[in-house]
Length: 190
Image (cartoon, rainbow, N blue to C red; front, side, top):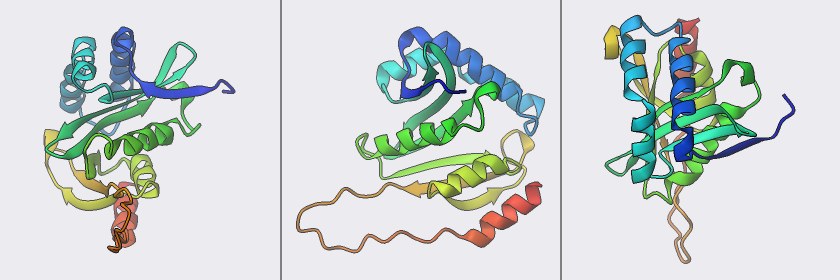
């Protein structure tokens, strides 16, 4: 794939294409049970996606190759936080850094949108997402056993770097990622 990928806000006219791609990606997740797939697909209709961007234009980001939507990142404001709900890439376009680009765009929008932290969850067996989240500075918080849809999930967080203020000399060092927990999660899932 040598085509240029543009990461941008979803346009209202793309609601149907994004909804269809989400459905394909979610239904293709072998780690989720049928109940989870059905429920998650139902949450993201074209109308719902359009409604989201009417309220918050950054709520749905897309990766576009020309006119074709090849990736998505759905997120929402959550009492001062940003919740990363779903991101995914068309299977034919994977392994080209598109998921990373989508999440980097989301992270870059967080402070401007008034958020001090991003959070999300991943299925415990989703090692690809776990590795990507770690590489972007997310930290695993805990594992929830027998949780949504009777499955196991990991909760993640990423503090949004504070913008520099003239005369601000506070030390804003980041907490180190608990690497041992990440390695354990990845080993369990494999």
